[in-house]
Image 1 (tube, rainbow, N blue to C red):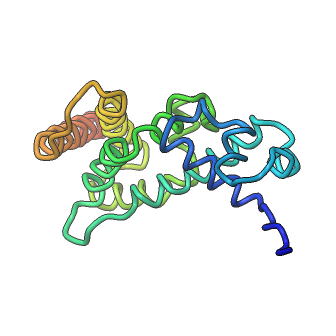
Image 2: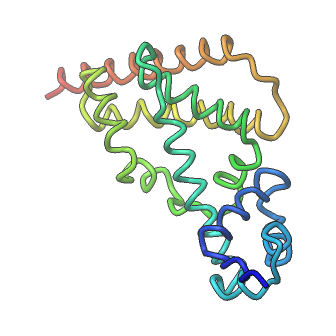
Length: 195
């Protein structure tokens, strides 16, 4: 008789992610994961003592996939607009994973200040600051404006409320970017006059 396949933690996480893609994070449980892996629930519960721990591990992996997706920008694209479009495109292509990331309550950062100070944003903010010539404080302000705009679009799309028209979205994203940069430049100029 051939030996039974060993069920690993990574196999469980990958199975949970597939469940998210197909039917949403709400459907991750020991039974659905074990069915996907063609095993009993025992190996699943051996690696994860709670379903919440399994969901958190799947969340971390989806978050990593999402970050890599956003940062895959074509050389001819503006890095900021490209990453904003990728953020929205991810919601179009993977709506269930997008909802898991941003509507499930599993996010680590629970406030805008926490998000803007996260280590993952350091390279993005550096590129933005280099491109705009703004102070880091104003660069963060521009980033938040554009990120919240992109998130709004992505959320509406992921929840089936809006048809995706990339040309239209790109135009709106560019307007948000230009407007945020202009407002930040004006604020910096006014601040310099008063100092």
